[in-house]
Image 1 (cartoon, helix red, strand yellow):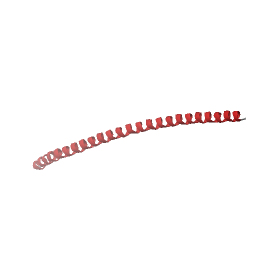
Image 2 (cartoon, rainbow, N blue to C red):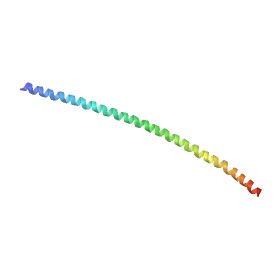
Image 3 (cartoon, rainbow, N blue to C red):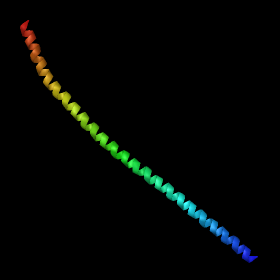
Image 4 (tube, rainbow, N blue to C red):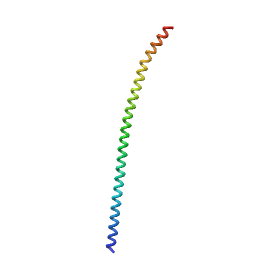
Length: 88
């Protein structure tokens, strides 16, 4: 009787060990997936920072070009307008 009880207890311990191993494997899978997601998010953050820097640079060039063209166009337009008014 005690031998049978001992076998049952050993069987229960074996099942618990198998269950622990299965749970540990699943936790390792979950941890690996979270690490993959974190790496992908880090890549997205880096790409967004690069995009933001590119957008800032593009915006600065656009504003600078517009100001330069305006600064060039206004005096030329005034000179052209003065020529038209002188001819009248």
